[in-house]
Structures are given as C-alpha cells and as structure tokens.
Image (cartoon, rainbow, N blue to C red; front, side, top):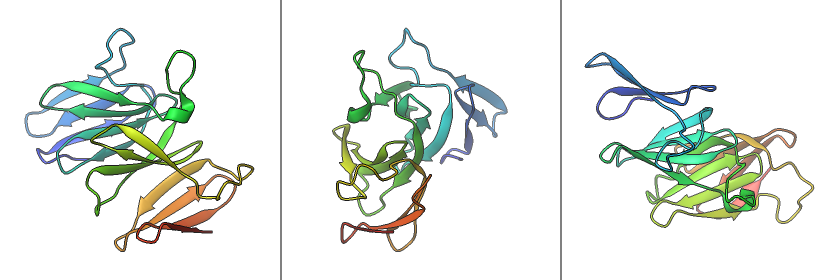
Length: 173
C-alpha cells in the first residue's frame, strides 16, 4: 500500500515490513529484533493497512499486530488476549486488517481464532463471536473486507462466507 507521502509499504514472507520511497529512491527494511520491544513483532507480514493518521498497521503470522508511527520511528505491538502464552507472547496470526470507517478509533482483524476489534486508543481487543458460542465451528477467518455499505465480509477456511452487519451487530452465513 502507498501512504500519503507516496511511500510504498510491502509485507514479506520472512523479510519483515519493507518501505520503498519512490520519490527519493531508497529502500528500508523493518525487521523484528528480539532485543527491541519497539521493533515490528514479526518478520512474516500478511496484511498492511494505513489509517487516516498515516499510521502503518502490519498483521503478522504468529506474532500479532504492529503499528508503526513514522514520527517516532517506533513500532507498538498489540497482542490478541486469548493467544497470550506463559511468556506473554502472542501466537496470533493476523490475516486481514479491516478499517471501520464509521468508527475511526477501531480496527478489526481476522485471525486463525476468530474476529477481533481493536480500540486504537486503549489497545484493547474485543472478541466478536460470529457463531454465537458454537466453538466447534471454524474460527479460522482467512480473509475479510468491508464494503461501501458497511457490511463486513468474512471468508473462513471450512465454513465458507459470512456477512456481518456492523450497524445491526448481526452475523449471517
């Protein structure tokens, strides 16, 4: 994706988050540094979203969600609570990052364990149960997007396509 400054942000399958400055013709690679909590959370970046504040959001495989603030040059890591292990690390794979345009303080993420909304101000996640408590159903949401009318479309690995009506808080298969 391109940001407001014309920089191209690229997710890789092991090389971290990369930025190509098309105007000034230079390249920067952002990789996870286990000794730096201000580095990106993982090197396999599956999804990227750039919000209205020009914050870069990167969904990683197995390492959760990271945001990059270009003003500070630092990443912030967000862990989906259900995935925290004994070392307080996330095993969550973030497959899609979905902006909620009616609520600019929220992002939704699809994971291998369901759908979550993130309050960007607090950093807190909320689990959104698309199956109303039926945990035997497939929670692996491999892709998601929101259409212009505010319907969130979710694709699962085994259960097919679902629609979530944000304004009614209602899921359908």
